[in-house]
Every structure is written in C-alpha cells, then in structure tokens.
Image 1 (cartoon, one colour):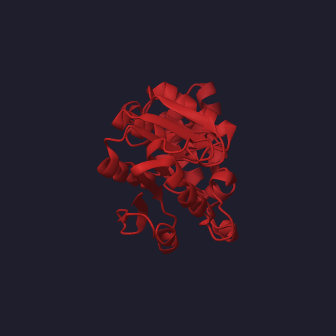
Image 2: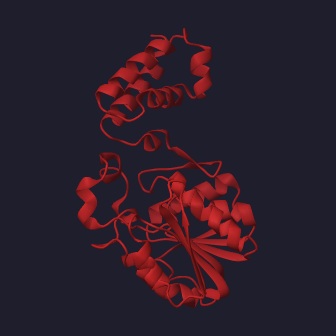
Image 3: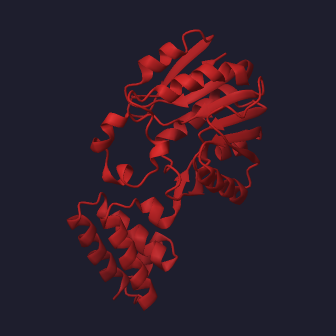
Length: 273
C-alpha cells in the first residue's frame, strides 16, 4: 500500500467514525507510524508502507476511532511553540491556556519566583520558567502527572522544582511573586455532555471540580495571599461561565483584571495582592 492510498483509506475510516478533521488526523497518525513529518507524505506519495508501518498505522486509526485523543496516541502536544509529551495521566494542553502565559508575561515578567498550581503536563511552569528565567515551582496532587511534567522540564531544559501536594499546601508563606493555575473547573453535573475524547480519556482529577465547578478557585484564592509576597500576582484560567463568581472571590484584592480569548470569552483573571 502506498502512502497516498493509506491516507485516502485512513481519512475515509475516520470520516465514517465521525472523527473531527479526518484528513489532518490521518496525516498525523501516518506520520507518527513512519516517524516522519507530514510534508514527507506528500513528497513521497508512491512510497510503499512496510508491514510494521501498516500495523502501527492501523492500530492508531483504530484507537482514534474508539475516541482516544490523537495527542495520547502520538504522545505529544505543542504549547507556546514547544513540544510537550503527554500521557493519559495529564490533561492535554489547550491553545486557550496560552493566554495565561501572555497575561503573566504582561504583568509579571520580572518576577523572581513563580508557582504553577495543578501543573499537569508542566506546560505553564516550564513555559514561564523558560520565558522569564525565574525560579519555578510546580505542584500537582497526582504523582504520575508530576512525573510527566518533570520529564518535560528536563527535556526542554527548564529549571522547575516539582511538589506532589494539594494545591498550594507545600508552598511556604510569602515565597512567590507569581502564582498561575489552570485548575479543574468542569461541574460534575455536565460530565455526560462532554466530548467522549474528554470524558472517557482525560484524567477526571484534572477536569472536575465539584458540583459548581468553582470550588478549587475558592480554595486557591483563599490561600494565595499567604503564599504571595506583597504586590504579587495570581493568574488563573477561567472556565465558561465562572468569571462573575471568581471575580467575587477576589473582591478584596488590590487590582483585578479579566482578559478575553480570541473569541471574546473571559478566559483569564489576574489579581494583585
């Protein structure tokens, strides 16, 4: 079977299974099976697949048709121009979370010590450490997630200390200039309405935050003043429909600003102590 035929057949299988962007997905999965970049597929359309490549490609297609996210099949996801390794132990980094980085760099680029609470893959901690040169710390309640994040930091050359703990509990009083977080914010009651790729494959501990979806925001907002130095910033990603309640939690802070994403939806809230 040639690469061109494999792409056509893979696209049709994914399309029939109602997988989003079937052609692109087929390209990514075939590239992963061949250990090549996507342009190679179009430069060598008549190349014959070796048996082992066809076996791997077929398995990847089957997994994707069953709902497994492409990122968990390939084990990688780009974030802020860097490639992060991801496993089912961590949430797949979303492009929307890059707004947290952008806001942090706009208000606290000169911070000396920063913490990422609920780090997951380490995307925020690693990115901000590399962008600012600050001393960086990252927490996660999952030891497995912290292991994935630590591997990403090592591979990308970021100096981050990882702590397995609940939210900010292991961070010392007055130790940070900046705290960032993309906390779980999906209400438990909305579970059945999520895409199967999210509901069935991504770690629930990184998705769900109680009945209202704002429980962890409240805990972070309550403990952050203990950890932040005077003038320090707390910057968190907002879940859909949470901006009013989270803003109320930060009513006593000196400065609060809300930043929208490209669709105009409130995406990030930043507050200065």
